[in-house]
Image (cartoon, rainbow, N blue to C red; front, side, top):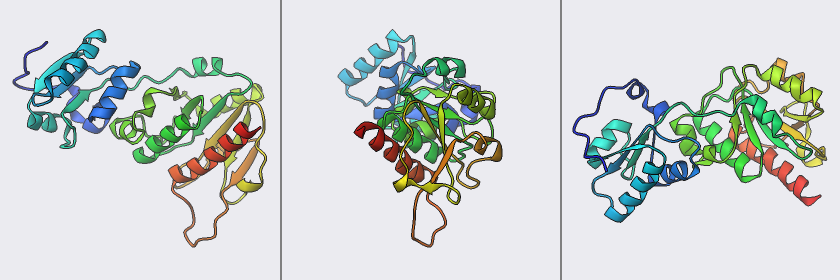
Length: 261
């Protein structure tokens, strides 16, 4: 076990804590157990139960993660959050799945969720959580105007970023073109030109659902690759739904139909 770290070292990771730190007991345990995104350094509060702290330290040791025991106040200063519950970790960049590897996951019943320029971290995390819960095989992010997987995304996903492949290809349109050549059904969302979601029979076989950005929807060079479009019927005066809520409704309908067949 390492002795308490008396003074935090200067690091390039301290410059943007939203992208480089995660905190909270549940999220840290999820991340450590998954082993997909091991921390660079793990900070535990000195007032945690000793048995619990030893369990975490053992897990960290197995992943070659350096552990520091610090005061709760000092950990709050490091991660710029007071709700850390005695757990915080300095993280490397998120390990995206290579898009070529993702294509090798494709099979006759694959279900991908493709996001076109989602800019809000809370929305992205919530969509990833929904995709994982509803059995999506992977999430694909746009290369343009797209928030990366960062601290807030990880927290909003409640750790789901650790349990589903997430890819970010160099060019989303090129990736969609490849899906077209592989005869993957691309289902886009469009609040004007889409068919009523409640009246659409989802295509069988390999399916990719494409969700547009909060403000602009699907971009033109993404829209052209969609085989069909759906919209969520609504009667209220507000023009559109939150992106994460809309995604949840569409993804559930896909899940419902594919699992009732």
